[in-house]
Structures are given as C-alpha cells and as structure tokens.
Length: 112
Length: 111
Image (cartoon, rainbow over all chains, first blue to last red; front, side):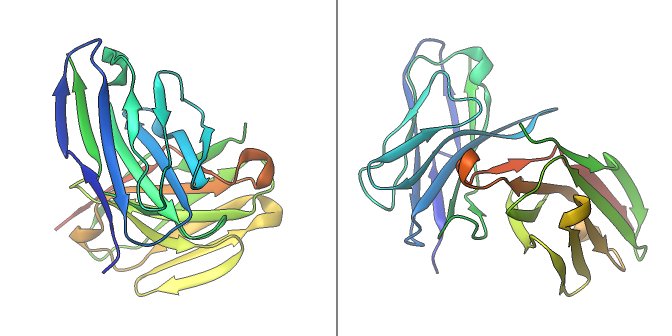
C-alpha cells in the first residue's frame, strides 16, 4: 500500500545544531507539505512543493528549508535549531491541487 | 489571511450520543477537508467536501460554501471517535493551494 513515512519518529537535539527530518511518500504525489503542530496553534504550514525543483514558503518558514530533488522525498532542514522549534512535525502529500491530503505519522522534535 | 474558526473547542459525549461540529471560514474557498487526529497523533482524512453533503458510515459532512460554513455530524458516537477534529480550507491559486487549518474541536467520548 502507498504511504508516507517520516523519520525519525522522535529526535532530541541541542540548540544551534542542524537537523534534517525525512519524509518519503510512495503515492507518487506531486504535492508535498510540511506542517508543525503546537498547542494553541493547530497546524501551521512551513514549506510546500508542487513538484521536483519546486519549493515555496508557508506561514512559518523562518529557520527552515526544504529541497525537492525527486518526487518521493521532501526533507525538512532546521539550519540552526532553536528551542522555539520544539514541536511535532507532519509531512503530507496530495495528488493534485485540491485533492485530499494524506499525512505521515509525525516527528516529535525536542530542542534543548 | 483567511480565518478558520471551529466550534465548540471541546466536547464531552457519552457513548451513543450524536454531535455536530462546526467550521466557519471568512472567505470563499476552493476546497475544504475534515480530519480526525486520534489519541496516538495520527491525522486521518475524513472528507474532501468543498460543497454539498457526504456520508461515510456514522459520519457525515455538509458544506454550504455560499454561507461559509461546514458541519461534521457524528452519530451514535463510540469511544474510538475520541480525538481532535480539524477543518482545513484552501483558498486557491493566490495562496498556493495549501490548506489552512482551524484549531480543532477536541472530542472525548466516554463509555
């Protein structure tokens, strides 16, 4: 069955370190998204991509970057981790603009 | 940006009861979806419903796009319905087609 896999499931890192969260989907979807979820804020969009070599900033993109070198993967990089980036991160994908969105199981990141 | 407001923020039901969750949005939308986040944190797509009514088992959803609201109905609730229900809307090309989420309705169904 097609799916979205996020890794790692849990990560603890120190302030200032670079961290990369992986997202791999086997749906062959064009669109991929990264959201963060925090208490009181719901889900907020970080970055998104509509295809290979395409990336776009979302509502809370400062301090994060993504790259899309193939259809299956959209890694999220925290250039210099900050305590404010402690959160649960969700990757999602959809076939086309306006199609149902499907989520991975999330990565819980703690920055100490 | 678009405002997505969900009500009520919290809801406690006894098993077997029915409930209605509401999502109001402040602008015309191309796309509206409902999600359930279970107690283990998984986000499951329930409905893709930019307009009209859909049903899936005990759940149904109605979106009245012209009046800018959507409703999620849960009938004969079960403990497995517990979790957080999110409404998300998409504005279309000008906003990059990405979904904007409400803050959710937290539902607890007790035995």
